[in-house]
Image (tube, rainbow, N blue to C red; front, side, top):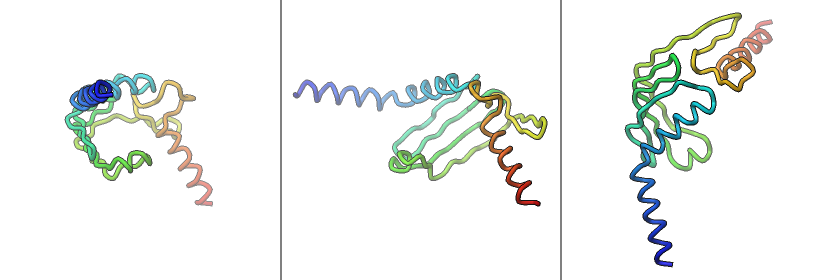
Length: 131
């Protein structure tokens, strides 16, 4: 039992010590899996109540810094208290009434990004509400 406790403690210590590298690897792998690529970023800080990401590149979109504040209970519910974006540079395309952000259109989609799908829904709602 003591040996098992020691193994669990060592594993937890290893994960916590290497959390920045592990989180960075997971974020880049997720971006490739979802088609939001090429992607790169540096996770500067990751604690139980916040995270700081730097030098984020998602396709043609660039963000110098993202700071997020949260609690673990909020994260479990899919909520983040505050997100601050600094020095955002990006490119957008407007074609046929659809806004897309190069590099952020998922590969597995039906040809529209999450953003453009949301804007199409807004446009439909706006038309119905306008008449």
